[in-house]
Length: 168
Image (cartoon, rainbow, N blue to C red; front, side, top):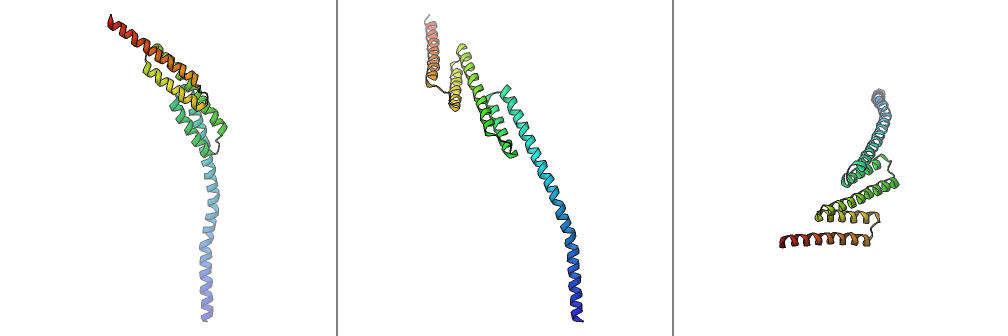
């Protein structure tokens, strides 16, 4: 009799555990497809963010200055890496375009400030040109020295004109 009670208890406990674990196993198996859907949604969101960041970079490259463009380029790189869509060749091309634009704008800036006789700002433009040309590998020391000489001569002419005016 004692043996029969033990077997009954064992049977009831086993049945209870089985009935408890059976719904839990169904719930666990149903979570996997949901996780898969969440992963797909996350991937789509990351790709969308990378596409938006690329669009914002292109707008900044077209309409804004170097530093906002550089920030937008770095944001695009980061989001593209997260999304798995990063292309190093495309990144290098965008970086080259950004630096070329900066070099061209720095040269225009240099010329304008020389004409306006604002030599301090002309020098800043020249230094920006030099740094970005070095970054691209298009820096030529002889060209830089000629521009620097031109700036120094313009300063000297202005100083001598100011001295002549004081004397008169």
